Image 1 (tube, rainbow, N blue to C red):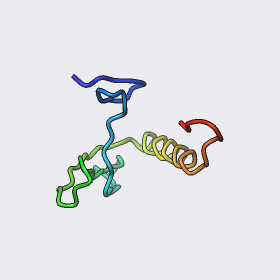
Image 2 (cartoon, rainbow, N blue to C red):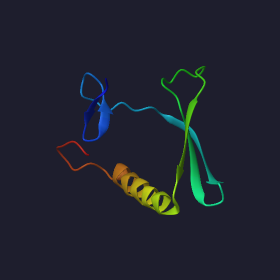
Image 3 (cartoon, rainbow, N blue to C red):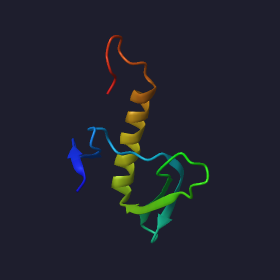
Length: 87
């Protein structure tokens, strides 16, 4: 069973389990929802075939997700405060 911390799956060392995204496609699904296909790899081995997750979101969910991702992108490109980790 995967352990969780702050709503994230974590490994035995307490680190978040993440996979690099190598591609994505957004599309209109069923004429009324937003489809999102995320392609990812388990390792950085260039011969590994990407896996994919396809989800649908309501327009409201898509807007909220986009705003949240933009907010995190802005935080990620800001230099960390001196003398400490940046979360």
